[in-house]
Structures are given as structure tokens and as C-alpha cells.
Length: 158
Image (cartoon, rainbow, N blue to C red; front, top):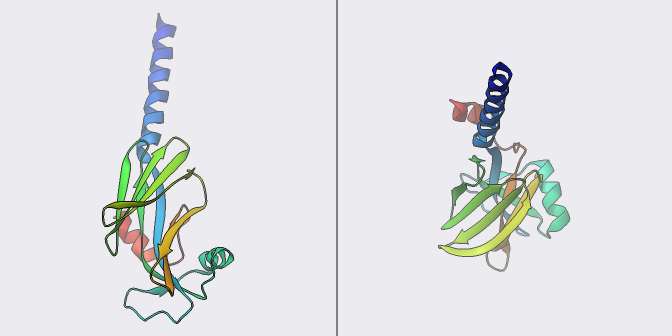
């Protein structure tokens, strides 16, 4: 009887630790990027993108100039939808199911794109045209972008 009780306690402890890990979720970082061949207008919030992301975008897209319009981070929990509000009536929803992350991009309430990737993928890029001479991208990534300063990161933790 004593051994059975110990096994039950151990199973309960393992179950609680597993649930805590699932509730912690995964942290993802997002960046809204503008790409263009012309010099991008100087906006108060626009910043140059990091070298790592620039290299990644330049191998896939034709634009000469890239600027980050906004960025942030979010935590995505298993089987729950996390919504990120973005500029220009855009919204992205992320849903984690085991080892898969599904992303849905909306503009003006209408579904524009949907994608599924492995949850540990380094990054996911979605976007579209912004007129004939520009495009926009939303980058979802696991590693912290160089454009998020350490001070801002520490402030969010408080």
C-alpha cells in the first residue's frame, strides 16, 4: 500500500510539472518590416533591421532597402490563440498545437494568409504588396531580434 501511494505521488508530481511546462508557453518575437527599392521615408518609429534578418530577406526578396516599423514579443500557449494587433488594420493570430504553430494573418478582418510550421522553426515570414514599389513583411521568430534593446526587454519583465 505504501509503495502504491508513493507511485501515485510521483505520477501526480510528473503530471503537475508537465502541465506547468505547457502553461508556460513559448516566446515568439515579431517584427513588421517594409521593403522597397527606393529610399524609405524617415518615420519616427522606423529603424534599420539587423544584419541577420537583412541577410535572410535579401536571399528571398528583391528589395534594396528594409526598415522595421514595429516589433514586440508574445507568449503562445498550447491550444490557445494569441492575437497580435498590427498597424494598418492588420492582425496576426498564432496557435500552438504540440510541435506545430499555425499563423493566420488578417487585414481589415479578412483572412489574408494562413501557414503551419514546426514550432521550433527559426522564423516564419508572411507579407504582401504595399503598392507597386513597396512590400511589407511580418517576421515571427524564436530568437530575440537585435532591434529589441536589452533595457526594453528588462522593462517588460517587470
